[in-house]
Length: 139
Image (cartoon, rainbow, N blue to C red; front, side):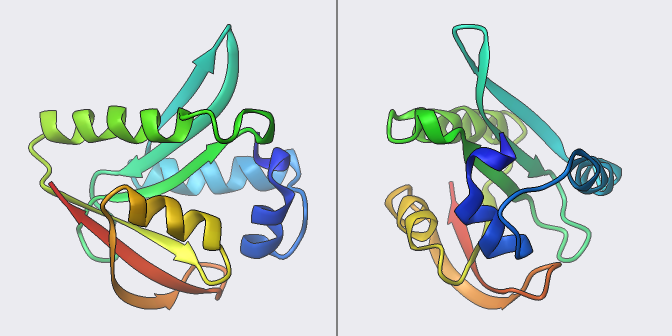
């Protein structure tokens, strides 16, 4: 899944693909913080995933960690559907706002989030020292 989006990998981690060990280490760290992960399945195949932290240890707000759609399934509405499902999950938990970050240069990602009601609230650096914009959406 992650390696179906080499441009995203290059932007975030500085290389076009990740090893299984890279992915396991990243997932291990996130799961230790309580990350929830939803796989998006179509015709018995994983076509994407969305993750979120109910409470980010850095600011105690809920954060979307990752929304990734397999390259072959982009622009089919799967990302929008995944976000709707996550919105329903957050509403059931009475979570009234959620944050996320977008790496500078990820114009496609920034456009998607803005179209889905997120607005920029600040900027900063991610765990890889990349410049990011921080977005938030209130329910």
